[in-house]
Image (cartoon, rainbow, N blue to C red; front, side):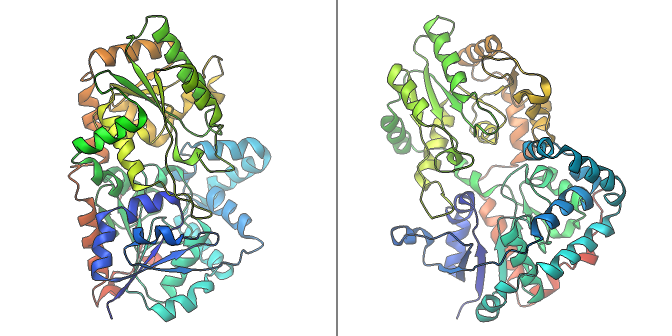
Length: 479
């Protein structure tokens, strides 16, 4: 029987990044691929062909009563000082809810966060209580050659699985799914043996923020961007534009939304642009395509009111609505592969894209579309500390601004002026967008999957155990 590769899928975007990639196709041809799914995730029979013959295993985990406390201490007391001071919205929300608690944690972190050994010791303390023995039977039965995760050990399910893999001497590889994960999303609770990152920036973050040795970090590009290398085919373009009712002979602006939890004025931005066309400040033939974030479609926490967008479509013939098509797999809702093609087509042909701080800016730059960041709060004025403007100063987004990859509109008038300028000249700021692509995506050659495949092959070799990274082997050679 072929060697077994175990792949953990715990988020809808992991399906997009892995299952739709040529990497998954290659792995299923050469290995026995087993997908391990967290509680509450079920793949309907109708969607099983997407998995190309991969097997499915579900594992129930047992929450520890002190697990949330362990997580709080890991993130806010024992994490490195640089890591705990990176900006992100989730941390801001948590601090606003519990200011006294976070003030105490900040003082403690000023001491413990300067000692990496203490952070590693805390990982061991956590693993004594949250050990992941729920996975022992699975690992004994399957004896996998290598474990792939698309989370780098920050979430409870993967933390347990990575700890179990280490006990069973199974080499692990975490594929970092997004540009901001290392700097602003979670803090590692269990070290993967190896990391796959998009670029040198993320490689340096893994070393400086977490102390990973450079030999354990592999710069491969982003799997989800392989699709963009060739761009949409003529048939794909025609299909998407026809389905959405977009006239290919007239320019369109893509308005990307994010969860109202972080920006509640998405619909007002659509109104501001539409009213500017009515007033003659933007070309009369301009089409407005509202692209909703996949997370807002079927999420009880981060979801949006979709009716407000349908209402605007009914009122104005120039507004089109791109609602991500999703698969309903219980607790996760992966976008369909066709939806990735729709997003690519919209951005590839857009005169300009408009959005609050969002990963969509990377997609737009990769596809040549100008980017305008929403740096104002709709029709109201809010102080900087509560304004969407501050999100462009977050660690990961600030780089895009500095590289000239986008312009920030700090008022409605500025937004209209910037849209008009890009509709007139799409090549404006093209060099800045190219710098973003070069620094964040590298060659964008469609071969990120092949580079990741080579790392998996290395780990699957008979001597793969020599590639394991024990915590004491970590170093700070990137500092």
